Structures are given as structure tokens and as C-alpha cells.
Amino acid sequence: MISHVIEHKSTATGAMEQKHEVSAAFPVSDSGGGDDDAEAVRRPAGGPESSRASRGWWDRNADEYQRDHGDFLGDDRFVWGPEGLDEAEARLLGPAGALRGADVLEIGAGAAQCSRWLAAQGARPVALDLAHRQLQHALRIGGGPDAPEGFPLVEADARALPFADAVFDIACSSYGAIPFVADPERVFAEVRRVLRPGGRWVFSLTHPLRWALADEPGPEGLTVLASYFDRTPYVEEDAAGRTVYVEHHRTLGDRVRELVGAGFRLLDLVEPEWPEWNRQVWGGWSPLRGQLVPGTAVFVCERA
Ligand SMILES: C[S@@+](CC[C@H](N)C(=O)[O-])C[C@H]1O[C@@H](n2cnc3c(N)ncnc32)[C@H](O)[C@@H]1O
Image (cartoon, rainbow, N blue to C red; front, side):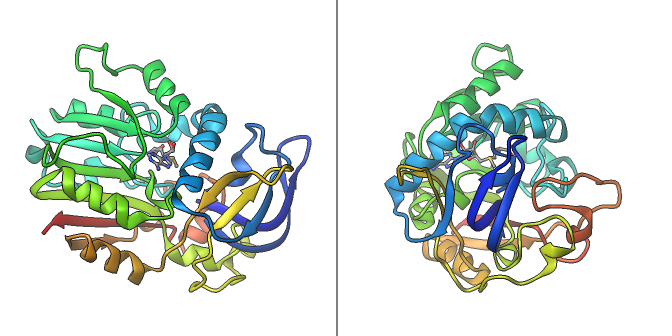
């Protein structure tokens, strides 16, 4: 879910003026946490650099993210993306009964809305995120470690999970760390390590096809502006040249190969269709585009 622009600047109202747009995916135009002078480029960005940038960006932008999207996400719903696909209906983590008593790791949990839903189903979630401020929102909403039905909140990088081997039955991530890491194969290896044999790994991200299109909710967002095959990261730099935001692209085939290479079986690849009831615009996601091209990909895997 990011805007790929070669050059942009924020207006006083926070709206982005974009120039030379090259492709799309997290709504940078939703930012407002102090990266207004950032400039966007496509260039390499490594693992530590990407994690550092993500921690800073999500710390600075967590308040705005939760303010803008908290209602749609719901305090205790499990939504897979802007289309509104709800785990209560989709059951991608397995049948309802399978959640009761299951140890579940949520990666890139944000304010832990999904973990709250999981706890209500009788699961034992652990909500992990890189950004301190996102986890503070989890505490603000409640259901964290101090609540009667509470669950742990863990501040850590998905690239180095601070857990013993084979301690979770399910790992999941709704638009969590995967789009933001330079080395997803490292995250997949970590997820496999902490899962018990046969454990499920389900995660969503911006549909890779969107990287070829302008990140605009209107008709201009239906134009191909960049090669789908260009894996060069989208990077934003501040005026001092520091990396303040990074997002990484892989093709659908790349993702399948990374998952199989890390020791997973792919059970399903869900491309949620835009439902009639959903009239929201979230960055580049909109009813117009959603009804024509996929906006989210959900990978449903099992530890082989
Ligand atoms: C788009 S938000 C999604 C949050 C939540 N799942 C939701 O649906 O609202 C992405 C989250 O991934 C987290 N994140 C980014 N890179 C990460 C990493 N390397 N390890 C752990 N979390 C990361 C960010 O801090 C942010 O909270």
C-alpha cells in the first residue's frame, strides 16, 4: 500500500502533489508524521536500512494511521486489507474450532486489532510489531497484557523473531512486515522456525500487480506506469538524504518461490474482490479500481 513517486512534496494540508509517478502500493499520501519534505526514488535498500526506516516511519505515523483507519479496522476485527475481507467469514487461518487454544503469532500487528479478535475466539495470540508507537495504540485500545483476556505485545523485528523453535500453531500478518523488508526469505525462515510442524502461515500484502500502476484511487490509477518486473525498492529520503520509508516489491512468482524455498506449501492465494458495501477510499484503494484489478494478495501456507 504505497505511493511510488519519483518526486513529491506535501501541501500545507498534507495532501501530496505528485510528479512523475512510477508505480504504487502503502498510502504515503496518508502520512503527516513529519516526512513532508521526503523525496521518493527507486533504488536499492538493504535489510537493516529498511527496518530502521520502517521503525521510524511507523513510530511517526502510527497516530495518523490509527486515526484514519481505526474505524474501518475495528478494535477487535481481523481484516485482511482495504477490501474488508474479514477472517470471521474467510477462515483462512483454519476452521473456527482450530483457533481455540491455538498459539498464534501476529506479525506487524499494529494496534493488535487482529490479535484481539483471535483472543476472543479462544486463541492465545502474541502481537509483534517493530514500532513502539503502534504497540502503544494496542495498549490504548486494551486487551493487552493487563486485560483479563490479555496477550503479550512484543516489540521486535520480524527478521529476528525472539521466540524458541516450534512454539506457535499459526502465524499471520495483515499487511504487516512483509512488504517492508528487503529480505522476506529471512522472515519466512524465521516464521517456519517458530511454527510447529503443520503450522499455518497466512499473510496479506498489496497485490504485486499494483506496483505497475499509478497509485491513485481514480481512473489515472488504471494506467501502467512502471514495469511489474522492476523489483527496485521504493525509497523515500529526507532532505539530509536519510532513508525514511522503504517498500519492497516482488512478483507473484517470486513470492511463491520464496515460500516454497523456505519450506512452506502454498495452499491458496486469495485475491479478495471489492464488495458492493465498501465505499471507502484508502490511499490508492477504491471501489473503482477494486472492481477492476486486485488490490490485495493473501498467501495461505502450511509448514511443509
Ligand atoms: C500497514 S501496517 C499494518 C498493521 C496491522 N496489521 C493493520 O492491519 O492495521 C504495517 C505494520 O508492519 C510493521 N512492520 C514493518 N516492518 C516490520 C518489521 N520488519 N518487523 C515487524 N513489524 C514491522 C509496522 O510497524 C506497521 O505496524
